[in-house]
Length: 138
Image (cartoon, rainbow, N blue to C red; front, side, top):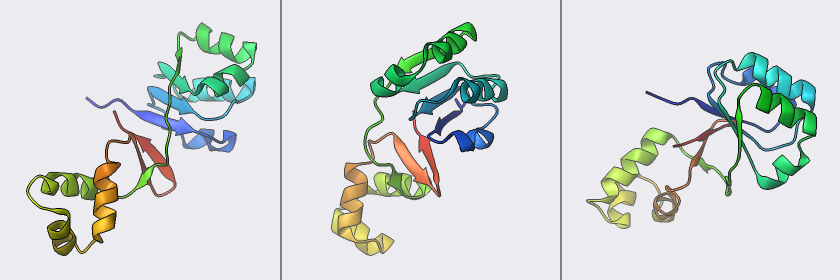
């Protein structure tokens, strides 16, 4: 079973959050109204993750609303830029890396060797960018 995760960094993008979202990573401190909109839209929301500085900027009212709805608020580091690649292509590269060298992969996949090296090195990151949306991996 999949756990639906999403992220939010702009109050205008609340309407694009998946309504079945169970875990939400917030990168900015939002007003009480925005937090209420999020809670109304995401009925299954159980966990909100934020950076330490974002949590410190949350108002007391926002924290009370989140607590009242039995939603947990955790501090979580999500550092680094998201990798911009199709997730299936990344899986294929990682799987093939076990059997081939960087040079052989570059020839077979028609991708520069340095790009393959970068993707394998940073494949442990938990974020992948798909279009304009960042997906957090478990």
